[in-house]
Image (cartoon, rainbow, N blue to C red):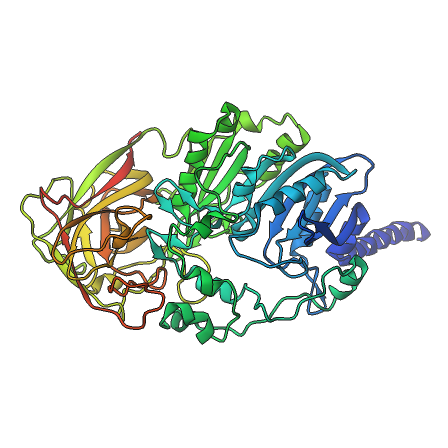
Length: 626
């Protein structure tokens, strides 16, 4: 009988040891394998110090660095409780032999200085690379990673070409794209010259009021370590119902009306798309150099999929070194903003199921870093396709050597009607046949009764807009939405690439907006939105000048391109919607020719879309026939 005790005792010891291991906090697990050095105040060239947490393996050998710089709060404690998200990322990196370094932008939380969204000095990134690469524990190779505002700074700082900045993984990086070709995004602030309202809601919960209390400059690390346990510098803003809050006029007083923090918003809202201040800070513009290998992540229902894809193509077309051109890789998923890793076996984006949208390889970013930062010959450059993209409709991952796929050919569909394309009950058609005589469609656009955003390619608007694909049938009953629908398709077609559209407009006001959506219509009538765009008509000739309309004169308006990869099955129909508002995704044009941001009263516009041999309003789709 005594012999039976030994196995039991061993089992209990093993089991209790496992429980103890499970009870260890992430920080304790990190401290077992890593040197944890939090609240290091890294100096910049102007004397400002940026709060930095460093987690590095316990080894005498120099290691590569994965670096994440962010405006968001990564403090290890909130309300006295340990927060594990950043620590989990650090633990994963350290286990793989990397130092993980996370830093707040200047003016954010424990970092010194003044914060300017989209305007943080590029030199901060360069100085951080310089400091890290000169540490005794660094092997001199730094990879940058992050999504959204944690990605936005990577492209512009790469243009400075610091030798230690070895590779990038920008994800959902539209907020870092300034001007790329015809896209004057200015960090997602604009689309087609119309303001995107995401920053209004986002800045309410992000910008620090200049009158808020701050820690004294020059505070020592040991004091910061003590303070961080009970004082994380993060304001707690009351919740705002942005479905109502964003409707306040004038736009420049929305945050003030919500009793929100004052800050950079009030100045930024007055800038025009080509304001010199957009070119002073941390945005990437197409006159900058870029000579770094990069692994880009884009998603179809993000706020900036088209500009992001244009950025990818710009680097390949304009890099000086062939090595740079050859080492740009791209993944395009069907998810919302920064939701790449939240895809499941049955991913629902809005209301539409896109099936199993999980990434083809969840380990791929570490394989990328292993190659570039450690020099591991793991074959990733030879085995990974240049472009991996998810096609909705057939719900599968595909690969290509370029974006769009080289098989894509533009095919043009023309708008036509008998003059009554108002709503889906009207007579608007989308046809390969060029229309003859002009039977224009007109609608009233009232800025105080705009078309509401319903789903879409959005981010960061709180409860005002839910992103993704939703059945648009109910929305399409509005008389101020023109609806043009193809006949049921005789065969399925894949549309993958940039979608171009050209509309001919006349109006009785000086300025207005034109919006467009592309829709996949199912045989049972369900109408799922794929992408959308807008053009403020005063900028139809470019963003360096404003050209207002003359009453009744017809103008050609080329819309900023949309993007998707969608398979329209046999029996489905292709539809586009045309209107003059998509609110609050985009701000409302008050139709006066004024500033919009300081106006409280608008003018009702009668807008007319023309379609004829003289005015061939059309949409061109990149159709892949394999």
